[in-house]
Length: 64
Image (cartoon, rainbow, N blue to C red; front, side, top):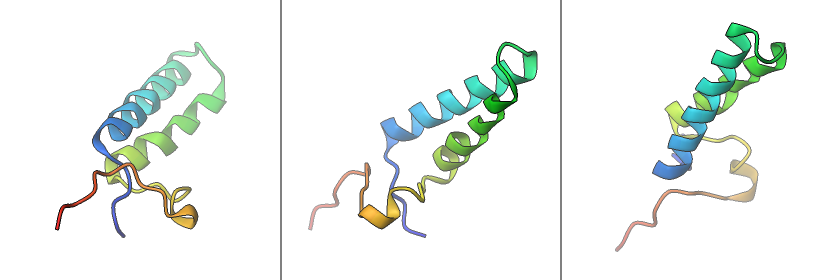
C-alpha cells in the first residue's frame, strides 16, 4: 500500500494514540481511549485508510 501519512502527521498520530492508550490503561478516561490504537497503527504503518478514497496525502511531493 502506498504511504500517505507524512512525518509531522505521523508524529502527531503516534503521540495521540499512545496518550489515549495510556490514559485508558491507568483509568483516567473510559474504555473509548483504546481507540488510540487506530491513530497509533496509522502512524506506525504510515497509511491512513480514510485518506485513500479522497486521494489525500501529507507526504511530501517527490521532485522529478
